Image 1: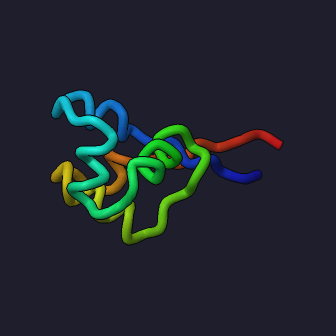
Image 2 (image 1 turned 45 degrees about the vertical axis):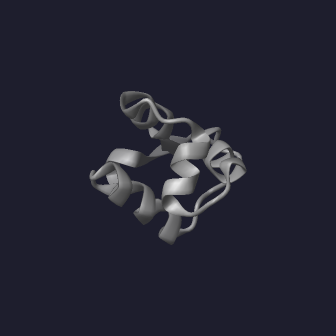
Image 3 (image 1 turned 135 degrees about the vertical axis):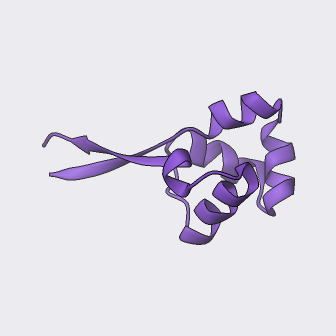
Length: 71
């Protein structure tokens, strides 16, 4: 059994009325990185995950969760 990474970045951004670009600028990554992480096409590094959690002032588990995937 493997796990799939899910995230709440779009919801957190929406609450703050932030664009992907504004969030990217705030944590020092590209807009494409934010888009790729949000859509699940890219698994972020621990550093990016921690920067996102720190920016939103929430635990990393509030940003990312593991969803079991049936094989």
